[in-house]
Length: 161
Image 1 (cartoon, rainbow, N blue to C red):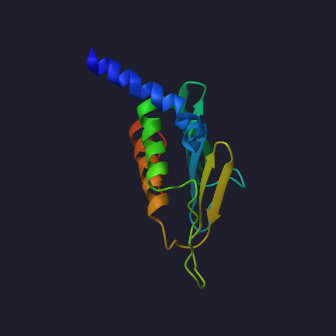
Image 2: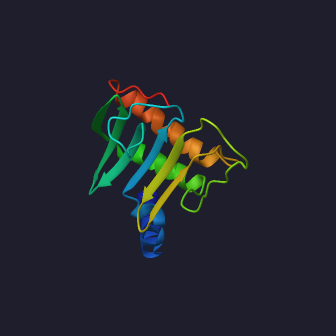
Image 3: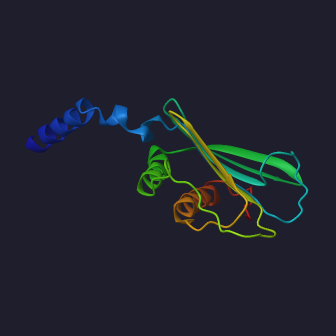
C-alpha cells in the first residue's frame, strides 16, 4: 500500500510540475531518417530518398513506415508499441537530437550521397547533408535503432543504405 501511495504521489508531482507539458519530447509526432547513396540510381519517384524509415504517433497509435524508392516505390506500414516509440524518444533525449546540428567534413567529397533527419513536434527540425559528419554519433544511434526496428518488423522491404 505504501509503495502504491508513493508511486501515486510521485506521479502527481510529475504531472503538477509541468514536466510533461514542458518536455519537447512529448510533442513529437514524427521522426524520420533518410538515405540516398551518391552513385547514380534509378529512383522511381524523383525528389524522394532512396530509403526512408519513419515512426509516427497518431493519437494513441504508433506506427513504423518503411519505404524504398529504387527501381519502383514500395512502402509498408505497421503498428509499433509504446515501448518501441519510447526507445526512440530516449535516444533523441540522450543524444540531444532536438538541438543537434550536423558538423560536416571540409573539402570536396565524391560519391557520398544525401542523408537526412526529420523530427516533427512543437516545431519542425529538418536536416540534410551531402558530406560525411564530424559528429555522427547522435544521428547514427537513432538510425541504427530505426533500422533494426524496420529489419525486425518489416521483412519484405530490404534496406541497404
